[in-house]
Length: 231
Image: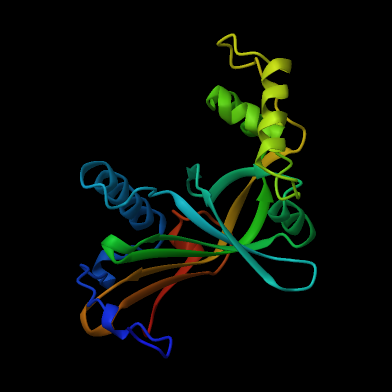
């Protein structure tokens, strides 16, 4: 066992397929979506990508410190990735104060990752309502029972609050059985840069990056400049 904090014996030589310029279009959406689709299929067929839409989201707190956590990406389109959360949570408050964030999708078994950096935009209330009503009953109740990111005395208190909410809004099988909480919403990251990382043998990885040149979606070649970064 190492006594100096190193884990050199755990080194793995990355055997990914890589990413060439010929495989990278002038706008990033097509390849990002293709990678995501492959991760979803691989997770279903091989089981080594258990949460392919797990998105690490970094924000900045009131002291200027970075803060990161993992959410589930629920949308990816030409505007950017989007997720839902409590607006009064730590991330919700931080994004209200400084509407910038970075996010990453990481699939270690595929030796692939996607990074986004850009501006945070709160999701339209209609989209939030439609998505909330599509959630399972228990998830809708949890949105009321949990004051996300706030301290709680213990698990018992949290579970009692959940039971109280179940009694207040019983399940009759109607999507409108549980109202949308005022404090529940979501954010979309509108990227200024997108980077695709593909692991290669000998640590000579591929890093293809798209930097924004002007307005336009992730599918608009005129909005982006593509380049390569050294690994």
